[in-house]
Image 1 (cartoon, helix red, strand yellow):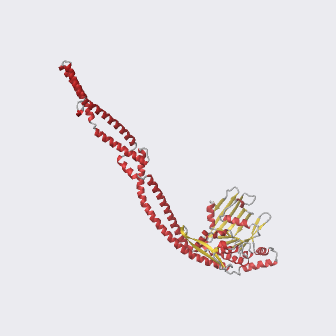
Image 2: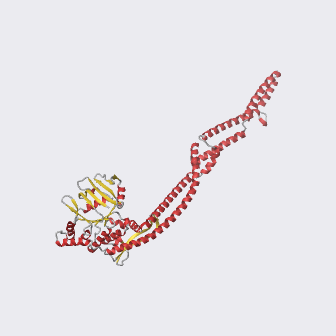
Image 3: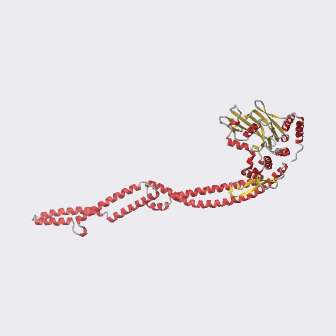
Length: 547
C-alpha cells in the first residue's frame, strides 16, 4: 500500500506531504482547489506519462516520491520507494528503490502497485481486450493455466510456421541457384580439376595442336620425298636422274657411282632418321590425345557456363558449395516433413486448448454476470441486467479464439454494448461493480478513484460509497470526491485548499471533518443544519452498512 507521498512543484502544488493508512481515504476540496494536481502527482508515481505542463509555473523541475509498504509476513514489512523527476529541459528521470530505471520498466513496476481509476481512466475496462482480461481474471488459476499453455502452444506453432517458411524459402533459393548441381558435379568429378587447370589445359591443347600440325607437314614432305607405298618419290627420281646423268656424260663410272651412291645413301640415312622420329607419333594417337583434351575442356567450359563461373577456381568454390547444398537439400526435405507434422500437431493442440479455454470463459463470464448484477442491484440498478458475452471467433489468437462483449439490457430492452447504452451515472456504477467483482488477488495494493461517483447522487451515491468501503477491506482505496455522503464513510479524510499563493493539503480530524462535510452538503460550513447533517453522516457511517 501507499504509505507516504511527497510532492514538489506539480501543477498548483508547491510542496505537500501526505501519509496514508490502510482502508478508505477521502480527498475533498472545492472545485479548482487543486485536487486535479494531486491526482496528477499520484498518476506520475503510478507510472503515468508526463508532460512539461505538469511542472508548476515558474519552476524548472517537479518531483513526486512515494513510499510503499508491503507485509512480507506477520513480523516483517518491506519498503519500496519510487520517484519521478520532471524537467522543462526534457531530462525526466525515474527511480525505483533509489536506482534509476527506464520509464517503461518504472511504469510496469508501479502499475502492479497502484492504479488510477476515474470515469475516463476506467474506459479502458470497456475495450474488448480489457473485457476479455476481466473475464479471465474471474476464472482464476485454471483459466490462467490454460491461457498460458495456449499462448505457449500458439507461439510454438507460430515459430514452427516461421521456421517452415524460412526453410522453404532457403530450399527454393538453393534449388534455383544449384538447379543442375548434381549433373554438373558428376560431369566434372572425373576431370580432377584444380586451380588454373583451365588455363593449363588450353595451353596444352594449343601446343599439341601446333605439334600435330607440324608432324602432319613433316609427314607430307617425307611422303613427297620417299613416295611411300604409292610409288616413287623425289629421292628415287633423284637417284635415277643421277645415274642417267653419269651414264650420258661418260664419266668414270666407278668413281662417280661410288660418290653418287654415297650421297644417295646419306640422303636415305637422313630421311630414314626423320621418318623414324615422325613414326613415333602416329596420327591416330595424336588425334585421340587431342580429342580427349578437347572433350575435357568442353566439359569444363560447359560446367563453368552452367555454374555461372569464369575460372576453374570459381568453379571449384561453386562445386564445394553445390555439394554442401545437395546434402542440405536432402536433409531439408526430411526436416521439412518433420516441421509440417509438428505444425499440424501444434495446431491441433492449440485448437483443443482454445476450445477448453472457451468453456472456462463461458463459466467465468456467468460468474462475473452474477456478481456484477448483484452489485448493480445494491447500487440501485435492479432493472438493468449486465451480460458478459463470450463471442467465438473463426480464428485463433495467442489469447484464444474468443472476444468478450459487455452488454446491458435495461427494463427488458434488447442488449446493447455497455459504453453505448449506459448513462454517465450508470457507467460509473457498472465500472465500480466490475472492480468489486474482480478476485482480490487481481487488485493492486492501492486503488485511486478520481470522482468515480460522477453522475450519481442521493442514495445511488451513498450505495457507491458503501461499495468503495467494502472494496477498501480488500485493498487500499484513495478517493477524490465531491460527495459528502461518501467522504463521511472514509477512515481518513484529506482536504485540499487553494490559498493565495499555493495549494495546501491537510489531514482533517473530527471537528474539521464536520466543517468540510457541512460545506460539501450546503456550500456554507457555518449553517447549523448542515453541521448537524454532517455529524449524523459521520455517526451513521459505521452503523448503517448495508453490505
